[in-house]
View (cartoon, rainbow, N blue to C red):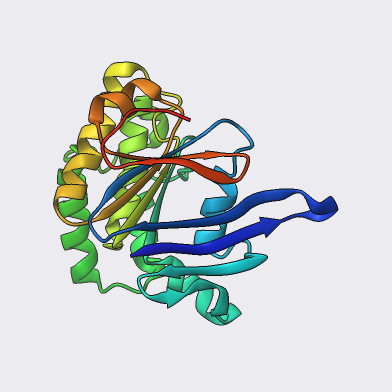
Amino acid sequence: MIEFINVSKSYDRGIKALDNVSVRIDKGEFAFLVGPSGSGKSTFLKLMIREETATSGKILIDGKDVGRLKQKDIPYFRRKIGFVFQDFRLLYDRTVEENIVFALRVIEASEKDIRIQLKNVLAMVGLTGKEKFYPNQLSGGEQQRVSLARALATKPPIIIADEPTGNLDPTTADGIFKTLLEINARGTTILVVTHAKDIVDKLNKRVISLDHGRIVKDSQRGGYQI
């Protein structure tokens, strides 16, 4: 599903963000990507969605060579990946429903499919009945659930959550991860970038640790270690 093969990425002045990284995350897997600031996590994600290109090596997403994508095909490729961000990135002048529907209109879903999928994702994240609320009428945890619903709306096979609970209290964070686990149980591949050591340790899922651009640990069942 996600495979990095001997991937390196260098920036100006020879700064190496990733150094000969090889890793495979299989379809339906739940994995954490951890490491200190500057370890290469952001570059890893940018390479996945072709926001950056690798200096060397190959990246395969669902069997497709990301580095060989034509510019016109990149927006369509990115629809295979749902993103959840720490800062939510919602449209604050639009309702919950409008935020979710926006993602569906981008992919030109039919009105029937939009109605069905809106109902499904709201139920999935526990926001049924809050369709007409605006983001500033919701708690931080509820706003993150809207962000998650929007990411799920297009039925992507992969969800990337970048510090999804960084601004949330522990109880709310637990709720977000419970939802992510439920989504994963339905077959969606989940990659979570986080510094939340307590949650990583608690969930006991695969942990891929980066440091100075290299994978220093890859534990199938383990805690936050680098």
